[in-house]
Amino acid sequence: MAETLDTQAPRLVFRASQDLPTVIEETAMANRRNRKAKRGVERNRFGLTRSIPEPTKRSVRQRCGFGCVVCGAPFIEYHHFAPFFERAKEHRPEGITLLCEQHHGDAKAGRLTPQSVHRYNANPCCLRDGHTRKSLVTNYGETGKRLKFMIGSATFETPIVLMYESEELISFKPPEAPNAPWRLSARILDRNGKDLLKIVDNEWRVGVHRYDITTRMNMMEVREGRGDVIFAMEVIYDELLHITRLDMDCYGVRIGSDRNGTFSVSGANCGKVIVNGGFRGDIGIHVRPSAKQVLLGASLDPNVGAGVAMALT
Image 1: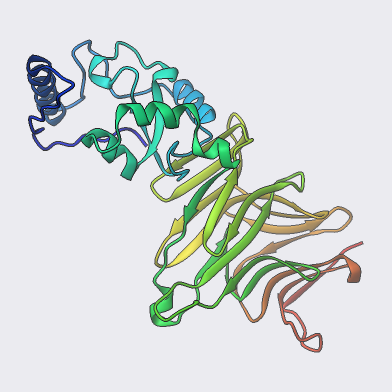
Image 2 (image 1 turned 90 degrees about the vertical axis):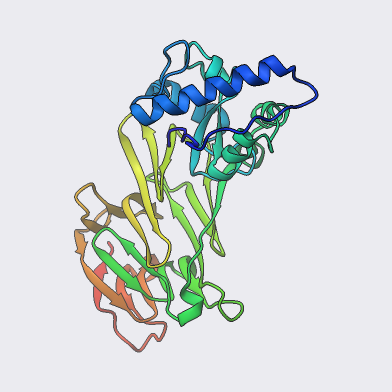
């Protein structure tokens, strides 16, 4: 997300560490910047716009671990700190860092000091933890409704969305207290069967060792190479979670959603099943190599049949 501009007229703030002429000059510069922004493209006094080239953005994301350097949130804005945008002559990756909306606002208001930004930039939260983090907030605890989960064109209203043998890979748990949200836990694998995304009780984490991770508003995309989107998820907070792109190897069973929204399940030595529509019951997708089956719309009761059964050979 590009840096946003506070279009309110800046207040004149005097700090003991600054001389008055500097404060007046910077305030006047900010006022001129706001007037220019209202007329169109914003430029600083050197003619630099806030349009950061994509290669520069990617370099910043990779250096910062794809999340806010302070808290690790993956929905980020680009913040010029060395030097500040007003004094920048070019978009230097080393002088730009990643901040979430809250911490970006704190930095612009002076609540997050420049010294603190430098310190966090030198030791980003995501690189310390090895993943980004974000809490999913829903209102489903208030009405007792379960959060819906969508992959491609298929919708799952099941306590267990994806299960491998007895391991729940995507599942929901009831709220822990009145008016609390339903709790989602998930383990999403990549095309090589390695962990890509983990969600534990609504907190989701993405490993930072990827080519690129981008976020905008409530969307997230993970790429293995230029243009190679292997995972895309849209978080619709008060309605559903929608995985729009997926290329997952679930212990030899391919589960995917392509750019056209086609959701399919296939085995190495068997055919492909295109999955559409909605699923209710206990388990949305149950991968059972021990029984050489993939069951869609399955039950925890072994005596109850599944909606669709695919043989694994």
